[in-house]
Figure 1 (cartoon, rainbow, N blue to C red):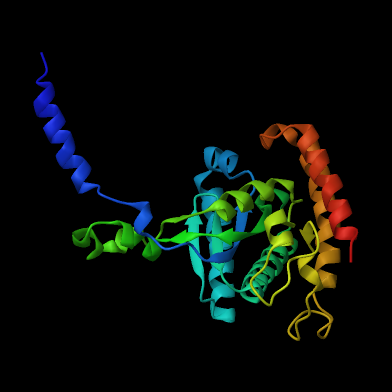
Figure 2 (tube, rainbow, N blue to C red):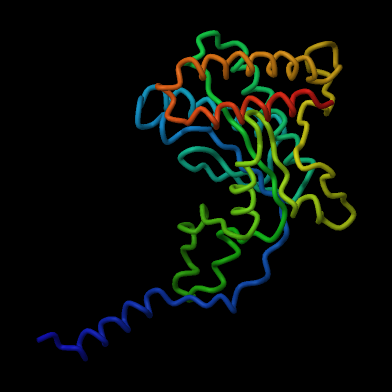
Length: 259
């Protein structure tokens, strides 16, 4: 028969090792959270390690390139099928996401073999997010001396909101959660649309002598329509129902016809 008292005493020592009080942490600051997702990553990983590596590493390379270009000061949190970008600055999030979308769109256009093309999409939310360093105050003083293990811990409503809102975006689209359409930092302005048209911002380095990325958008929209026709003809290989492909095709037609 188990010695219940001994087990209880042992359990108390383990609880003491995990001592933490959320009452001792300061309120989280409101930030923008962007979630960029590699669509169908689960199916791709189950089919081909090489293809998974090609798609995922290129997405993270695009993020790294964007971060260096814009001197990104926020937080990046890579997940198996995508990456979170967190920043207090709307301008920083917009710049980061736009560059990634243009880079990945260009990769899609330049890749002629349809089976070597990947689909991405994302979403942006706004609200309080706790990051690792903000949680250390809830630990014991002994544990506060080495809080590095919390560096990659992020949580808060916008993390979930961005993740869920991504499902409403078309391929190569960016959905805007209602939190980012309702609230913004003091002195700023919320997003005004349910889906952000990332190609509308202008850049002197863009194709077309600084006219922006509308030409990239137009070619991408046309290429996506052809890609979904190919997917419909080869559906058995993609692990998605026909209705989903038809929905993606319709959403892209609407999204890329705007602006």
